[in-house]
Image (cartoon, rainbow over all chains, first blue to last red; front, side, top):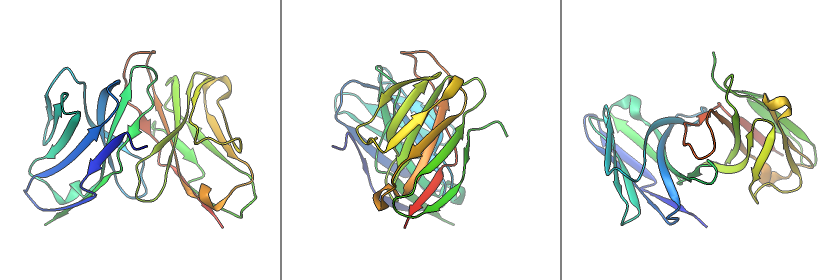
Length: 112
Length: 116
């Protein structure tokens, strides 16, 4: 049972473009939604996170949009750079314990 | 480097052998998590410690798997009688917080296991 569904599986964007990754969740008990970035051979690193009491959060070139009624959230990477080429994972957790449930990942390639 | 460290980084073993991985969390982090990541997939939760207490285990963690965190410091994950399906990246993460409070999980570089 995949509780967090992520799309697309892969994405190619030109330098300076916008990368958009979408996630949908099923469990309404989820109340914390982080995004992680992972480079080959490395562990995931937290990029940005949001709670459902806000609809948008921005940190630098990264923005999360959250739609609680639709149970969807998305990551926007503005002004994409070649160094952003990585795999991005959305995740969710709930109050009873902090284990993260991850989406399947999106491999982003930024072409110079 | 004060991040989460894992040892070994790579392990190749034959089916049926036992393997043990070690995770050293960030100093003073009271929570420690183990996840498994197969190629092209997101990490999947295995188990979680608060200090030395193992508070939750996933149904993915069969009886061949055991994890410990003696004295609430480093943790070990042992797989007995390895199977080819155990081939994956085993990730450790740590965080500092109290129950009910969401805090950032910091991941280590992982141990990549290949079972031949």
